[in-house]
Length: 308
Image 1 (cartoon, rainbow, N blue to C red):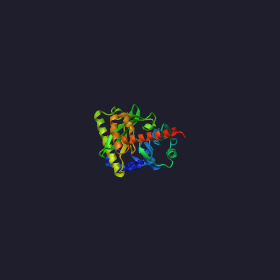
Image 2 (image 1 turned 90 degrees about the horizontal axis):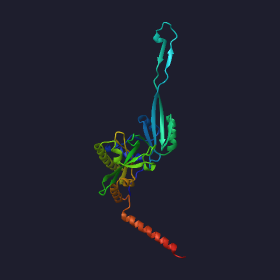
Image 3 (image 1 turned 180 degrees about the horizontal axis):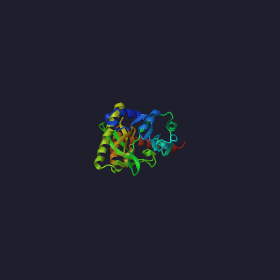
Image 4 (image 1 turned 135 degrees about the horizontal axis):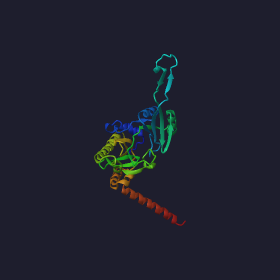
């Protein structure tokens, strides 16, 4: 039976929102429209706009909203009528309420554009989105490592007993100036311990690790109720500045090779499970393919050597 893959971010989000154990970890997420753009900008200082279907962080944009209050110039009204009027009435100063200027900063990759009206912002977004389906998600202020934002990838797989098991956590640090941490976008790999332990004491660090391991399993169980042929998932987890985890996205075709760069022993288990449920070929299958390929090469070479 083939492994099920689910490409729609919105479809996965709506399923997870029905789980008490998982929904509290999901940032506010809506289907993108002019109406939801306005509402999300009112609610949150930063929002991410993502293609509903897409990989490697392609097409992801961030809108940051800044509101600046400036003092309006005071106007002075002079009273020139009755000479007997009191001194306090001869001049009257008015102090109007300060003006608020709203600015929208749209970033895509390292490119940033600044707009002073929602109409201008929407027009710029429409040019990029066109007719494709997008979602808009509450921006989480990410925890940082040496000044750069990072997030985590939590890998959960079906084990040899066909039960869900979280098998690894790794970190990804964004490249300077980038809004995504994806390795294909220039980010770098790091261990969970390297990134998180400087921010939390050992007790909180261990509790967070256990929480993420459980969250991976709860998420997989909930998704499997709707998508029964899932065998593996990868959770993209943001840690906010207080260390609270948030699920940014769930990938049903998670990269597994990156774990081999950071934890050789852990990767052996990941690989063993992936072979068992069919993600990776077994060593016997690989040897058979190599033999067949070598045989074809030899046969082709022999034909070339045969005189006509």
